Image 1 (cartoon, rainbow, N blue to C red):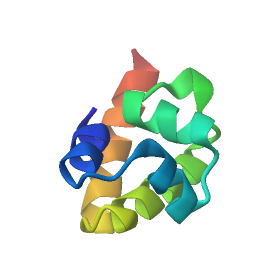
Image 2 (image 1 turned 90 degrees about the vertical axis):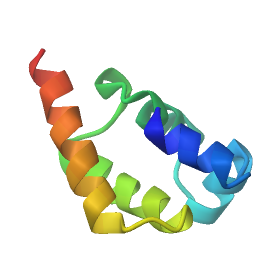
Image 3 (image 1 turned 180 degrees about the vertical axis):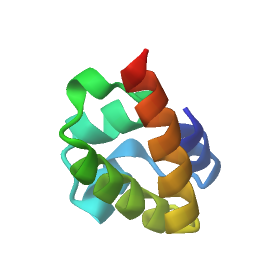
Length: 77
């Protein structure tokens, strides 16, 4: 939800984000919901998060590290 909130705060539409990052809209929606069932393997998820963070003007590594920690916890549960 944090990625979605930042995207909305930056007034960037979902479609604009998909155009900038060239990531499949299905995956961006799953990233924003942190829905592991609809995401590919971890290495791709991290790459997608890095691209989205960059497009949103965030510190990519910090965002990706934080996201992946939460993502792994969600997978374990």
